Each structure stands twice: as structure tokens, then as C-alpha cells.
Image (cartoon, rainbow over the protein chains, first blue to last red):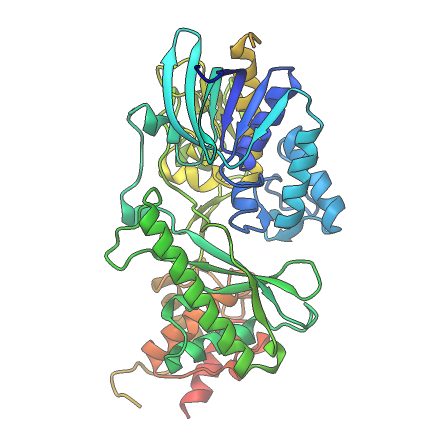
Length: 406
Length: 86
């Protein structure tokens, strides 16, 4: 007996910020939509990697007050997050950032999806193969129960790593290892003190002291702590350089695994040092590890259009634009902290539809950090606020292209 | 103190040095009493600055030196480095 083949209008690969928005947008048109996610919750970097800020939600502004850049799903998620945390956007210079909590984000994603009758979720599932046929795509999806076959009229690659391109052996773009944005390793800390009773400069000095003493690894020199907004809870973030030989490869599981082991070792040494040396850190401990490191940049698609750093600097607009990019280009090719490049004016840049359409392919769309851009533009559009917007656009286009045949 | 280390910097020299080391991106006309925190000095950059100050000027800044006042401006940071060398 041949196992039943499932048929969908739209399949979205990856349930991070882009895939979540793509699946919601597709389902809201009435298209039978399946969202394939490798973990047991949605949110991607914002949940599994504990990245706890939504950047790119708001326009750049000199005047006070945050103003949303993209309506629709980004605005809905913003509203629900503010309601959940009680924390509004924070201003840093000309940018506004919304602190977000990974626990709330996973729950908000559940609730948004549950409201869509034509949306199915397949968690604990990984795409393992893609074939083109006359009606669209035949997908192989690996689960612990075996390989499942699903047919899709259209496909959205929101994997962050252009995995569909990988399976189709299509030429993609990836920077050489030393030019890739460095990944972040974020972990949860319980520090039984009020958030006000934390002096980040003193903590910074203590970490340097620990590194000088030889008890804390050098990588800790990039470690920063932020209050999570919940009593006694903080997040620690370290940007990691990757292997000493310079061969950082975000697609290589052994490289990522080693990076994550280093992250845990550095975090453990630093928090133990602080707990021992600083009364305001007494009894602090690491409360949880991320499911994975926070990859900022990896492989991306070549699209019908490619957004460039110059487009961002010039705040260029396009007739077929699908979303607005507002986050300054944030470069982290080394672990010495971000280098921000702002556009010449505070105006946003358009993201053309062609960046979401792989060159020479139909029935296929891309969303999130692996859309078609150059390295500089990717340093802006990779942030979650913008990924919601490109996800919504890709999901809407994918549903329209599917013809609703399922 | 090692003789290979540079003399205590003036505030102006410090601005050039912070830029040159890539520790901060300060405008060419950044004032000696300009706000370094507003210019991007955060706790992460402070760690890099402390390590670089030790390498360049042979001065070991300890946690208690790292108050907001003592790091606030190029002038204040230059004065801190000077005071630690005496």
C-alpha cells in the first residue's frame, strides 16, 4: 500500500518569524497551508535562540515616539507582545526596539495559528527533499514516524538557510567564512536581585578581571546582560567568533555544535566568576540554554531582484515593493560589538517583490533572512521585525500563485 | 611600568585612538566633553576599551574605576588614565 500523499496549496518551510507570518498570511486568504517546523514551537531565532528584541518593527526617527513601519502581521505581533510583557518600545538614538520574551512569543505564535482554520502545523519535521512536478512540488518531510510525502502547489522557503535551494542544487550566495556575520549565543540567567540593582559597567569590569585572571575565557569580553523584564531573570548574549581556523560555517552541524559548546563553557565560567566575585551577582545561576545558536547570516537565494547596501543608504523605493526595511545595517563580522551604518536620511527602503522570487522559478517564494540581497543589505533585513513583513508578503504571493487547488 | 607603553593621552589623542582602534565611531569634530555613552559606548565596548587601554597605556582599570562619570567623556577617560599612571 502506498502511503497517502497529502496535498496543500502552500507549504511553508521553517516556522521562525518569517515562516510564521508567511503561513498566517497564506491561510488568511483561505489557502490550505502547511507550516513545517523542526522544533516543538514556532518563533525561530526569537524563541529557540532566545533573541529577545524585535528590531526593524519601527521607522527610524529623530522625534520621540515609535511608529510602525509595516502594518498587518508585524503590527499584530507587536500589539500582542506589548500586551503580554507590559513593555513598550525602547528608544536608542534614532532606533526603536521592542523587548520581547521568547516564552510569550511561542505562545502568541500558537494562538495566532490556532485562529486559522486552513492552517496546519507540522512540528518536529524537517524537509529532506524537494522535486518539481507538473502541479508544483513534491516534498519529503522527515519525522520520527518516517518520511512523509506532501504535494504543494506553491512553496515558501523561510528556512533562513535557503534549504530548498540546497535540495534543488540551485546556485546560491554565501559569503566566505571570515566575512559572515558572527553568530550570537544567548542564555537565560537567574539573578535574585532587582533589575535596577545591576550596574552593567561594573559587571563589564568584573568580566575583564576574570579574563585577566585566566579563569574566564577571552570570548567573554563580548558578553552583555540585559534584564528580561521578568523578576530575577536576565539574558546573557555573547557573539562568538567560530573556529580558531576561521572556518565558520553555519550550515555545518559540527561547526554549530562546537560553537554552542563553546558558548556554554564561556557562559558558565563567566557567571560562576561573577557569582563568586560580585555581591550583586551572589546566588546567580544559568537557568536555561538556547536550543540553538543565533545564526545571523548564512546561505541565501539569488532572486529576480537583489537588494543592495546602496539601496538601503539611499532609502530607495520600488514600484513592486512588498515591505519596508528600516533597521540600520548592523555589521557583526567580528565579536567586538555591532557597527551600525545608517541611511543618509531616516526614510525606509523598499524591498522589491523580486527579492522574494528566486530567479527563473515559479511557484516558489522566499522570506526572512535568506531573501535575495547582498551582504550589506542582509545586515538590515535579517532582523525579526522585517522578517515578519517579508514573510507576510511571501505568504500572500504564494497563496495567490497556488490557485487554491487543494 | 613598561617603557614601550605610550604616555597618558590627551582627550583629543584619545578620540583619535578610540576611532583608530575601531572601538567607537566618533565624528571628526567629536568634542572633548562629548557624551561617549550617547556615541555608542556600552558595557560591551567598555570591556574592549579596558583591554585596549591596558595594551596601549599600560594602565589596568579595575571594576571600581568603571563608573559612568569616569567614562562619560574623552576628557574624563583621559583624566582617569592619567590618575592611574601616577
